[in-house]
Image: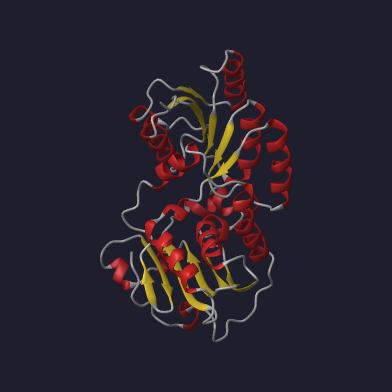
Length: 326
């Protein structure tokens, strides 16, 4: 019989924290402590009303250390990191320092060289650093990967069109998300999961072009061994197609593989739970799994703009989006 594990969580007021709380509950484990400088954390009551809550990271740190010294039954075994991107590295280090494994939201770090330091610390503390790559748990994308691997690349690169438009208000650019040094920019905030799963399916990225780089929009082309990906990311509601606005939708997600629509955004609300189930069963994705997408986005962020050509995303050529799914 599996013994219940104790969890703590950093970033309890963030929107993604509830998915982690649900995953902890649904895998039969216990959340014992949480922290966030903001106290709008009533969501905790829906999952673990007895969990301790702190607004100061120093007091939270001290509490974890106190639990560690009480022994195996009391100590925190896993620390879930749901804080802003630029704090992930520090909070993963906090987990290791208190003897816990880290489960970190995307991106594990913003700059790729910090991965090497975490690798050293992981070995020193004999703990694991896991990263949340939930799209790898999506059944449709798993099926696509299996199909691609079975078919091989004998026919050359496949043509991929990736579009992700999600409306964000003016708060977005004022918050830490609008500060590239804190968030890694739009390609990191909106794109890291997509770039990860594309590399997972089609192999490590070989080259990247950047055609558009604005605070609310980015677009370009990435070449993978098995695919050429034309991508467009936007947090501007002005980019939503009529098919979305007419239905009152605030997001539009689509991926087309050689013209075939791949549904990957609907009816998969439990992907975080699947991530937890996998890592608790001895699997999970770690530092080296996170590296390719973080290196790719760093390259995109530092790639000079080039004029979009024939290989540009349709939206940059004034073409309408076709066959997209919300």
